[in-house]
Length: 85
Image (cartoon, rainbow, N blue to C red; front, side, top):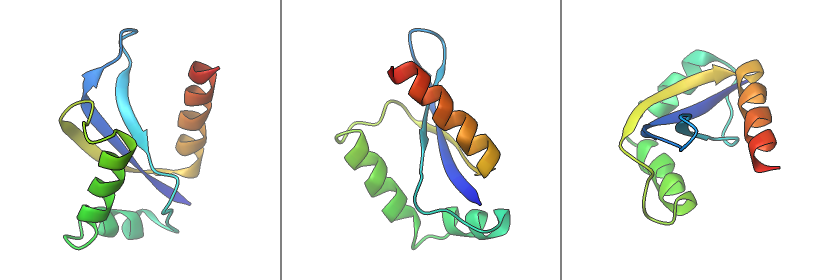
């Protein structure tokens, strides 16, 4: 499976970069994911999710949108969970 990760041009106090990891939708291939994130009809849905999650104020300008495999997604989720606890 593949997942969408958004990187922002902003950093936390510890120097880590602000990112948002979508857990839904997920995709069967990189091509499917990349097609979705570049589809003009899908982009507003992704932006709406970001604005809802960040209560209308993104942590910075979007630097990059990536499609990552499940292994990377799991590592990112593990990092977030260790920071949140």
